[in-house]
Length: 148
Image 1: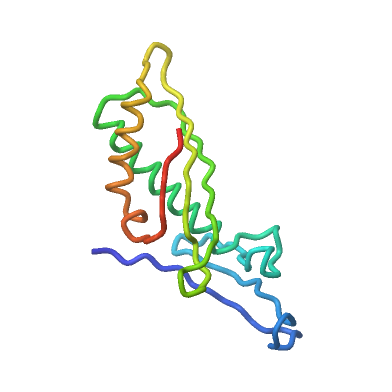
Image 2: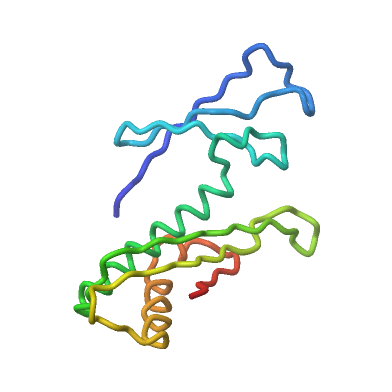
């Protein structure tokens, strides 16, 4: 199988490593050369201008689900022309009180060529198949759903 690498770099800088006194901003470099500044969620003291792990998790699921959906549509001969999604990760607690991403909900909207109509029930079935074959979905234990 394949390996996919992301390299993280963080330094303390002038801060003190004490509760509430350090910056969580860090750089994430991907194998293609793209770099992203990441941080903790704003609720946990992070900078809202940057990506947080919870958003990145929702984005990874949304992206993988869409690419799987595209592959299935291509095989089915569907005339898909656009796809947009709003992925929402929700934090919660485990029964023993640990924080976790408890759910991710996808809200995809698709566009098709004029005259190519797909019934909602067929869209639902195709999204169920996409979920079943999505690499990221198969790696997550949180609740996941698609809302059309």
